[in-house]
Length: 213
Image (cartoon, rainbow, N blue to C red; front, side, top):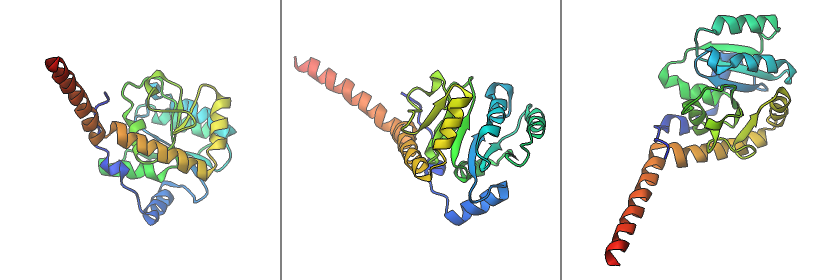
């Protein structure tokens, strides 16, 4: 049973005018497709793979990196070497109260990490209404359902195909709605309370049945 998370700030919608202003501040245009990563810029997050795959994506696809870490300078150098300085946006650390808005400024949550345990950022992104685009990983079982709330990939070709599909705003809305519903139902504090209550009720029903017998 997953521990319930406080997701209220992520579930709350961001007004359209505020979203547009934040996107502009981050360097995103109205027609850009923002693949958003939130987390520590460290080796285990495998962000360099995202930069390696980005050139094959349509020109309107940008990679928004929210966070900082020991690999930032290396990633900035990689972006320069690949001619991606206008498509890889380093937003830096976000204040805790602004993190939810950073998710909502994006269009898709992306991760190439192979080292997650709980993967809290996946759940926050889902609660924010973002479809997922993530490297296939066992930790995502029960979280990412390909074709339902996002896509997983194992190869560059798979990544590129998913990005092309996610150019569709209608598809993003459908996947994002499903992602948010799952996050609220299963991973929120209320979802945890409902699941825990069901366990207690089941145990009590079994005990009452045994006593009656």
